[in-house]
Image (tube, rainbow, N blue to C red):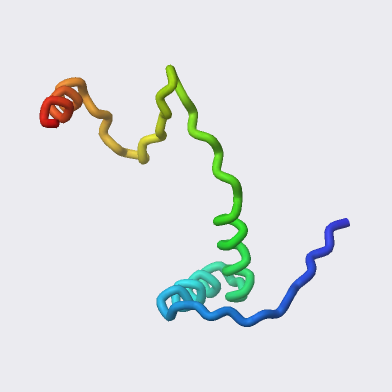
Length: 80
C-alpha cells in the first residue's frame, strides 16, 4: 500500500508564478498545492543522458522543424 503524507507549509511565490499555478490548478481541476507539488517533482526528476553517436550528443528536433541541409551546414561553418 502507498501512503502519501501531506505537509502543510507556506511558500512565498512570485506573483507571476502564483498566477500561473492558479491557472494550471483551475485547468486541471486540482488544488494549487497539488500543481506545485507536481511541478517540483517533475523538476527534480533526473534527466536522461543524451543519446550519443561517435562521441557526439544527438538531439531530437521539435515536431515540424525543418531538417538542415548540407548547403546550410556548410554556409554556417564557413561564416565562422
